[in-house]
Length: 196
Image (cartoon, rainbow, N blue to C red):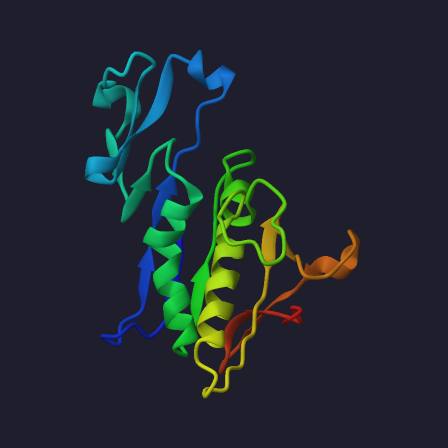
């Protein structure tokens, strides 16, 4: 899911996208599976042979999103279609958020953090996640505009087992657990996140 505040037409926008990871062994043997219908930006539950299930079984046949990505979609494609525009807006002074939501083992970490070690100064996207690509693009755009002064604040948090954790704090203890606060002026915010 992604959003950027203050788009060019003055509206706030939230886009919801789904990325389907490849089925695991257990899922390939199941009688019902979820399939992406990229042409329609939808997902549907089908039989393992690809036949549609009657609506009386599923309750609802299709779920539609702003964008869908199938099993063979690369993280670069996800970044280009969903996150890159938000990164450009952020460099131009707007607020932006990119977050991944899903159950355990659904592919959030793979999409956001990547699948390998990224060498400093590397150019390609091998193993890079959305976070690496966004950081690379942000600093590239900043370096290309030396006359302008930038203030960049980044928070990196996760919600896990109903706790908000700061991923920029080293260690595994309670130092990482954050409190959610509400203020009439600021609205809802996470207290004392590390900013880099």
